[in-house]
Amino acid sequence: MKQHLQHPVFSVISSIAAAHDVQAYAIGGYVRDIFLNRPSKDIDVVVIGNGIAFAEAVAAKLNVKVSVFKNFGTAMLRYQDVEVEFVGARKESYRSESRKPIVENGTLEDDQKRRDFTINALAITLNKENYGLLVDPFGGIADIERKLIRTPLNPVETFSDDPLRMMRAIRFASQLNFRIDDEAIAAIKSNLHRIKIVSQERITDELNKIILSAKPSIGFNYLFDTGLLHIIFPQMVALYGVEIINGKGHKDNFYHTLQVLDNICETTDDLWLRWAAILHDIAKPPTKRFEPAHGWTFHGHEDKGARMVPKIFAQLKLPLNEKMKFVQKLVQLHLRPIVLSQSIVTDSAVRRLLFEAGEDIEALMLLCKADVTTKNEYKVKKYRNNFELVLQKLKDVEERDNIRNWQPPVTGLDIMQLFGIGEGREVGIIKNKIREAILEGEIPNNREAALNFTIQKGAEIGLKVVESTN
Image 1: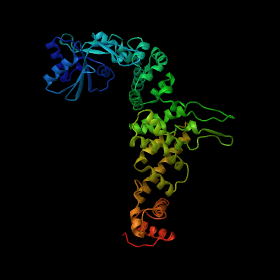
Image 2 (image 1 turned 45 degrees about the vertical axis):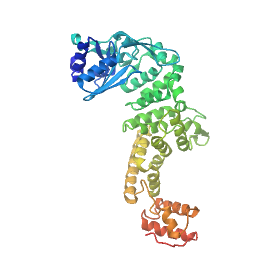
Image 3 (image 1 turned 30 degrees about the horizontal axis):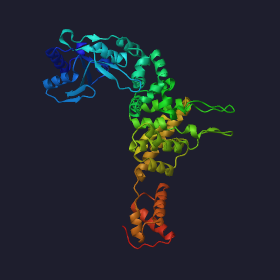
């Protein structure tokens, strides 16, 4: 293991440990990632004794600042390109009403026992007499080789003590494409109610990490199968299932959503675009209707879905800012490019899409491409070819008409000055007519054409020009 301890911070830690007669170990994610061949710049060090005092000694030797977190018994420093966190070895006990442990000083064995999973309980000795020795009491290396998420101790106690570990198990499975041990799955199912003592912020943080994994469907399938999703995100669970009447069914919108999510993850790392994929059909359950002549319909699910987005974001403690508005816009518009791709594309329809999507048009097109989940190769090829035509049309119309992030060439103030009127209904009427005329291609998107059009429409409602605005 010595070849993985080449960073100069390790030799300093080792020398300080020798000088103070303290045992020190690299532990947790840094060690795990060595065996996963993943680069890591975060190093956790556990010492048998006072972790804060040890960190301060190391910081003094390195001539860097140390941040101390007394409430947590930890200290952290940055040196060159790594961040090192120090903690004293400890053992923990829990009360049923809280996931905050009662902490006591402990041994390395105690500290490894309190770790969430065997793959995170690996340690490497940093003391000179056995520098680089791997300490793996729970078979973490074997579990990495088996691609298995397993707890060091009884999983029922592990998850009951800290229920967030249930989310973490699923998050690691999703990030690493590992399988969760059968006993651990059973323990999650028996501890579902315990998730309610965890703050929504911590739950959502883990959920976002699942969404940011390479194939989030792995995590969402675990969330669904264990029952956790039913508690933390019931609106998504409502998408599950197929109903059949008179031999007519509809696709399972839960698994369709997971496919769309996986699809979009192939083209973007943007968390909020991935959230748009999750929520694009979220209103299909409340809008589902059976029409004997047509079968199942979900009319208006894009409008209702857009209205559901702020409530879901608030429920999950996601930001209620421009990120939410971005997701809301994409949910609202997600059907539009698909409709365009299925029919003859008019310039006016493209202008309207550009006008409404603005700078988010590329994100919208990515979402719509991801939304094609049919297994019919002919349909897939047809959709993709039509999407390319729509993309070219969008580019051509935008270059010619400059509609994206559209600003009216004639403003409300221009109209008031032109006709010598104050704010009122007439100004709104003329502004709407200008916008519609440009979007429909009746006039070009420039000031001269818009002013002439304004004078004409003003005359139609009895307004006369009193001042030039050229």
